[in-house]
Image 1 (tube, helix red, strand yellow):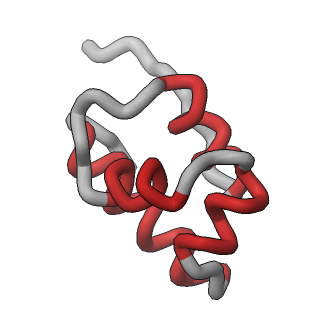
Image 2 (image 1 turned 120 degrees about the horizontal axis):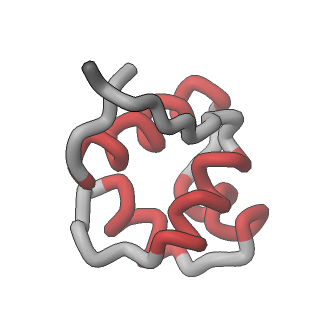
Length: 70
């Protein structure tokens, strides 16, 4: 999956969280972030803190890989 913006990133997190059966509250607790952060991240808020966003992605089993285009 190619992620091109914050909304797509948030959608990927939400889809994976639901597939794993986590609530937003449970995910926030295991990632040591606030529930509001998870909610805003999943909603595609473009100003989400990168370090926390990566922590959440890793916790739900998503890796971030960078590839050169073209």
